[in-house]
Image 1 (cartoon, rainbow, N blue to C red):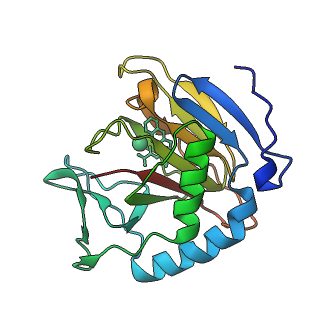
Image 2: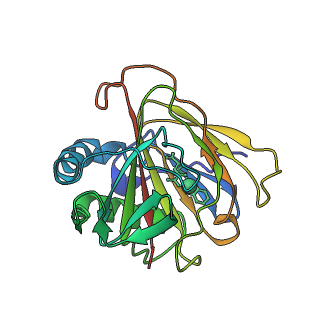
Length: 219
Ligand code: MD3
Ligand code: FE
């Protein structure tokens, strides 16, 4: 996996480069760093409208990752299963609007990864505290699996587990740093993936947390 060195001239940033992991899977190192202050401010607005909460899995377990959504649809889990819902079940109201800086970042990253005209209608915001993890899973609740998923890593670093199309395929470990953006589409869209338990630390912007934004076309 030799990184394809690429100047993101439009991002005015040197520490950004594109790495093609597999057909359809692209890692844009540092892509979100230039927008970090605007993302941070937007995140404050969103979390003031819909607080983080620990969802319950269909099997009855409390997820260690805290979540919320913005956009017209949001991913939710409860005893009945997983689904996308236009209403936040906690408040009974629509999810907060997706901030313009989020939408533009997702669209620009998708285009840079080769997916033109990405139109996300859901942004799942995951918050990891030390010890929090996400076990291997596939994302397949979205109606249109032809659309990619774009993810943005912020704050503390984490180890991403990148598996294959079968649960038994042994995952590769990829470190994800603040500002890294990944796009998953085409043949990689249904890869199993997860996050190892987060290590403690302190990030200048995000403090003791890792925040991950995943942009989806849910409907
Ligand atoms: C590969 N989030 O929210 S992002 C999730 O860091 C999720 O919080 C992780 O998995 C996180 O569902 C990983 C990277 C990612 C997201 C979606 C994918 C990788 C993916 C969908 C298909 C294949
Ligand atoms: Fe996922």
